[in-house]
Image (cartoon, rainbow, N blue to C red; front, side, top):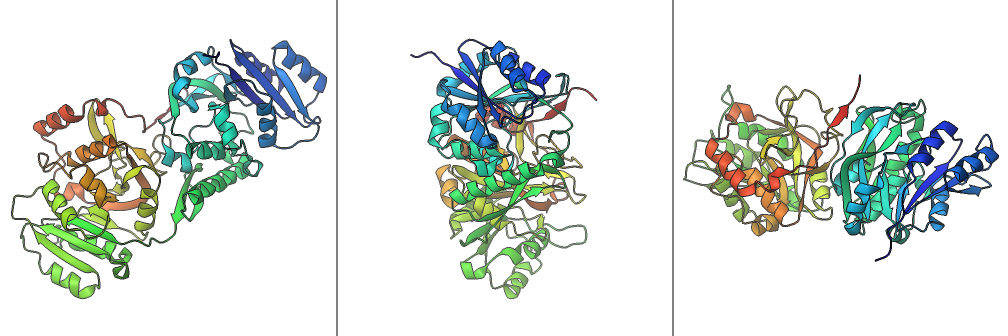
Length: 515
């Protein structure tokens, strides 16, 4: 086996020499070479001093007579690199001591490695930790979380064609997306190995400093989606954070079956919850495509709702009676069994939609590679969070950010569409064939944790589950029943999925170290 070597690549442009010295010092180590490229001879105060500084640390300096941009400069350095892996390091940042040691444990079966990182002040002291999620290809489209400490196998870098100058400013995002199209061997090291300085000109201090860089990220995301045949308009979520993006997808062309388990419960005024759900969902259903809605009930009095719904809509509306005691799992399975379309939206009867069409995003996200299930962001009537995806803590599942008053949580966890360990059964979109492949919902869990169990079965097939935060609705859960799990239900789900619930690498908190 040949000796493993790392080539550290650093483009240089108007450097602060004290910061560049820290960068050079941090990149030294066994089996490591450091290649720097000055992008334009006039973009440094003293070329002679720069050459002396680089040589004093045993690094190599390449020089472009004229500036060509960060992508072209980085590609030039890679051409002369001899390492098996490329480590991209900015000129004003630095690596942790012995940073290569965790890499040596990870790289044998990896093509792309990234780590957590520090935000540091100008003196190099850490201000905050950026905890990053595990490999999340959907999230990567809308949030370049793998930036700052990005290690790529050189042969993979060359296979995708290196950096592309038209994406300068977000060239790392574009590269990561193209790498994700040819390999799934991404590895997250949950240790901060990299420090990113927060200077006055840094985007971490003021995003407006490099607005053009964020726009390049929008272009990279759009290009990536188009590679999968998904037409979309990508936009930044500027009012929340410029580094987060969302997509407006083209109108769907496939039919959907909506399955609604119901007991025809009413609100305090006597109005059926299911009637509210139907009124807000029906504008987005398309009879001409063959859409249908299937209500599975127990013979309870419907106050004439079914008749009113059929007379008011051209939609195919079916009602299937289940005379057994209410079981969400059984009624869901009955609905899937009779559903005539391959795309199925499982929906609680106490969900209300707003003005945005949920189906465009649901269909598009389900069409991404290896996605088996898509959920949505649900809120209570006061707009506090009811469900932002499942997460695991102490080997038990819970709703992320439950009752939180703001979507500012984690690393855009409630903003961008992203992978999660599970989603609520109140809003689940999938293929009927996926439901069949996992054997449907478990009848041993009639009320609680059936969705958790169902999601883990889907994950065991190798599918990913996506929390579509771009799909929002109101969920009246606390008004229709008490969301309390029995001890036996907790014991059942723990016994069945304890190993999978031991780790959740998708929900990454962002923790400050100082005020």
